[in-house]
Image 1 (tube, rainbow, N blue to C red):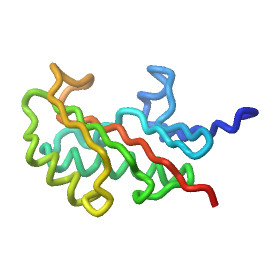
Image 2 (image 1 turned 45 degrees about the vertical axis):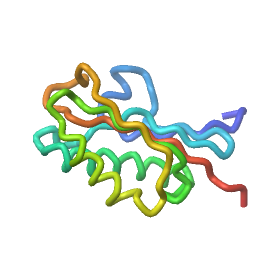
Image 3 (image 1 turned 60 degrees about the vertical axis):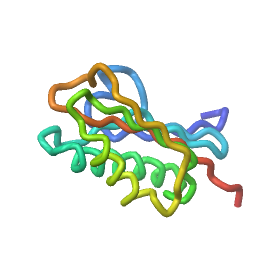
Length: 126
């Protein structure tokens, strides 16, 4: 785009239904939309790993790496296990240790979803 905005869409269907992109990069900043697991039958840990992997893949598609991640947000459905979600976060981002918020919410859109994550990255200028 003329303003330098780049978009990444993964084509999972939610983007078209709700009119958004999985991730957007403008300048050095990458914002990844709320991302859920591809397999909603997995447990909290499995869903958290899948969602974080998909969000990190979006960062990579827009020229960043996991080391550029500065903030994560993890939203948990009432039945989710926060310790399992935290374990997935440590596994994938523990060496980066971004700022993080984890909250329980009233529910997530879509049956069976326990975890939704958002990621923000700041890519250093080359």
